[in-house]
Length: 366
Image 1 (spheres, rainbow, N blue to C red):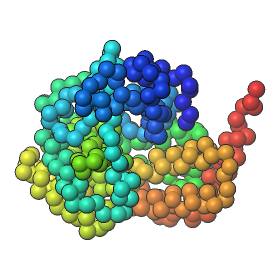
Image 2 (image 1 turned 180 degrees about the horizontal axis):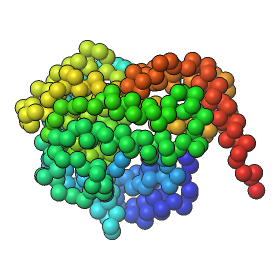
Image 3 (image 1 turned 45 degrees about the horizontal axis):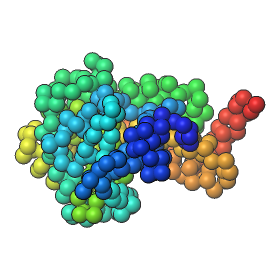
Image 4 (image 1 turned 120 degrees about the vertical axis):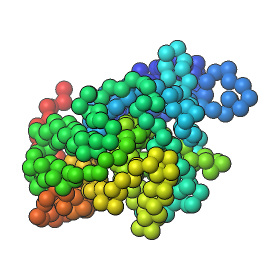
């Protein structure tokens, strides 16, 4: 997704920095066009700090609900309560986030690999810090609808609204364009009813702040081995066990370390907010099943659009995409109630056919 040369984010970055030559970007990212630069006139240690200015891509498909009106407002409210989050600096009405210098956890320790003990412990600490933040103690603007704010502890209601969002905003809203692919995968509106039945009956747990997207690329390790947590735009209030389920699903820890994270998470959150792990042994697998099911609907769209953006697509690329989606679908077969899963080659052929149909429907270039 290429930014326009005169995009608002770039123009604002030039204005704030005062020097187009010091701007780096746009940085690689799915949701935002982002530029990084130092502020003019900074002295001492501040001269080493860079800030980022960004704006969402205008044509981006959003697959997750938004809860807070501004990520910068959330980070400002969390200052002093959760260490290891970017500072926010206001310049002429523009909220700039501090750019954390370092490497992503994913670049240092790839998916399915173990995470070193010192960094692992900092992730556990983060969960403890978040469970202490409740809706009553973080009074900032929220943009989610009233029905997306179930009463404290109503974990069934919380998950039901996430399923509703996935059904309406991901599946139904994109059905006209991606129906061929959904049909080949064997998913439809009945899949959501089976999913609801599969995950219903969760134990009550007190709500807290959730990051909701804690994967390896959202952790930055600086030169002092301090772990920073970025990209809080999907944060919300809800079931603390959902945040753990999302984290385990996205991180792909080795089995031993996944079990250790669950054990240390339970000990940490119970010490700070008793009841946060109620029903964990039964509910955690069900919440992970929800994440597996959600990925079917989001990843088929992402994979198709990723292929569409490649000018030269080869059979091997379709084959890799087919294998990837089949693996995702097979993992989600139980919660979606699927009796069978199509082969990788059939999914790959559907992707290729879909792209040919999209090309045939595209208006001719002028």
